Amino acid sequence: MSDNLKDDPNFRHGVTDRPFDADPQPLTAPRLPAQPEAEAASADAAPSVTAEAAPPAAPAVAKDEPQAPAVERDREADHRVYEIDGRLVSIFDLLRRFGESDLQAGGLSRLADLHIKVGQPARYRHDGELMPIVNAVPVSADVAKALVYPLMRKDQIALLEQEIPRDIDAGYHFDREQMDFRINVFHDRDGLAMVVRALPRNVPDTHALGFPDQAVVDQILRLRQGLIVVTGITGSGKSTTIASIMSELNRTARLRIITLEDPVEYVQRQEQCLVSQREIGRHCETFSGGLRSALREDPDVIFLGEIRDTETASLALSAAETGHLVFTTLHTRDAKGVVTRITDLFPAERSREVSSQLSFSLSYVIAQKLVPRQDGQGRAAVFEIMKNSSAISNLIRTGAWHQIYATMQLSAKDRMITLERHLTDLVAAGIISQETAVQYANDPSQLTATGQGGGNAPGVRPRRPRV
Image (cartoon, rainbow, N blue to C red; front, side, top):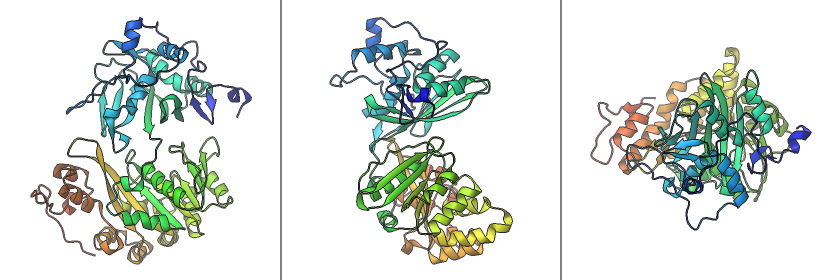
């Protein structure tokens, strides 16, 4: 780390923080005149989000909410550059919207991401749908800089402004509002763009995750070695699931936990466990390099943010085999896909060797999705759980992967469940609709009859699995 970066008052623990202590914007960044007092007072409210049904109301600052010091409030007014419904708001007004009480469900915000792109109005991802802010004007190139740069360090701004700009991945801690965010800034053909993801400071309890069988979580918490893979598409809650399980371990066991993340999302407090959280690009260069070092640091539990290459996959399998409990994530649609994805990372001539290694080191695969609730109040988690039982292990080792799904269907005694079975249960409980179940099922033909009189999924019949 350079000396001038250490002296930057906006730099603390590797992330931007307290953005009004100094102005990180270059001289070329636009700054609109301050609003009249009457308009400035009304601009404290952040914008609402469009929704086809019951759009959230525009936020307002609570009367009993402690106000920012006058100096910080004045400096924040200087950053109000984006016009929404005839008022100017700042990037900090937009971030506050994630914390509004009317958009909370189950302790988490129903807003997942804020998208800013030149030529388009700013948008929020609300209950999984990307919706523009009501009456927001398209973002100009100058306004995009004025919205992005206050969240960046000086060295990051320099990378964005070089001839061939770099993408920026960073964490942002909005301490005054007790909110954390993950930020990605990049350029496209229209100019600057940014995606901001809200990260809850309070890790959800494992009982609030929505697992179909809490006994599965209890079994995972008792493990002291093996590989546990949580898989799903981006934004499906993988990091939240792992953070919740690790937080429970932190409260109930005395272990050494080392995490390798890009970037750090959930901050784990030091409780019963000794926890070291490392960020790729700041504390170590790569996942594989950090994992190789971690194996020499006496860990009991390793959280590997993602398996991205052959070397990382090989080290993760070796770590699980040599007596460590390893958590990691992948991007596949179902549990079976984890087996094929890891094996396909290796050359074809090593396929049999890797399959054998995976059959011994794998403990659990958790595949998950977030689906819209029938009552319109947020999303519900749906899971597919695969335990590496003797039957599953044999299928992995022999390469009979096409039989894994059918074996899971017949393995309820091992507390396994398919995604379609859990979707069916959620329909029967009235949590999601039959149409939603069909839309999000990997194989709608495997949806069984519900208890709501809806029968089978429209146009399909349940199949009897064959092994």
